[in-house]
Length: 234
Image (cartoon, rainbow, N blue to C red; front, side, top):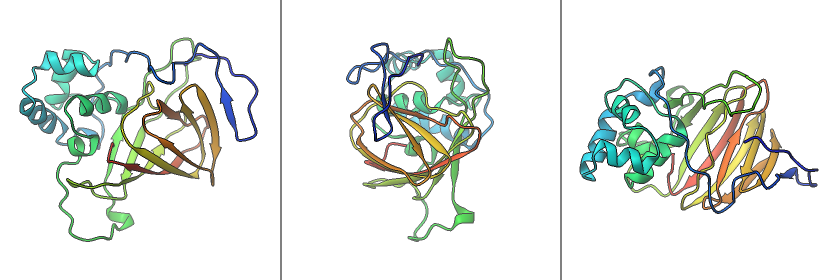
């Protein structure tokens, strides 16, 4: 988002100019391009996405239109030849009346309440596109380390969001629910509506998920955030 920022308030919030997206009317999604499959996000995603689409009796064209992506990209994702960005996958999940965890992870298979650090599953999403008008800068990927193995009927979802330097989500998203986060290390820029907050390790946040939101790592080191959602979104 190419915007100028005014002076910040005491809580680290920076209110953007009128060129920022409306807090209640997120901008239309950009067309997503295909990204070669490099990470765990693609494991089984294509089959689950195709199954969910067929259950909803949607054609490739209809689902692509609802999710704001190209039919070509959707076909490649279903075929296991590309993985969508986190924001694009979120829109696909909404269109299919499901969540990202169900599409990426499949049904939970654990029967223990304990999640060992060395057994924690993770899913990696490709870097978001560069923003037009911004200086060229390599953008890192986003990885979600699962603190809770996704399973049907869960009310809470817990992940550690690992943002490589300059990694960011795409356009602002909004949905039903609530979110709570704690910055474990690094720094984070969290945008809620038209207000930008700059957080550091030890800072926390809470907001209603109906507020359009996005985030990025503005620093040169990795950022890790403990992130809790209800109901499960990612």
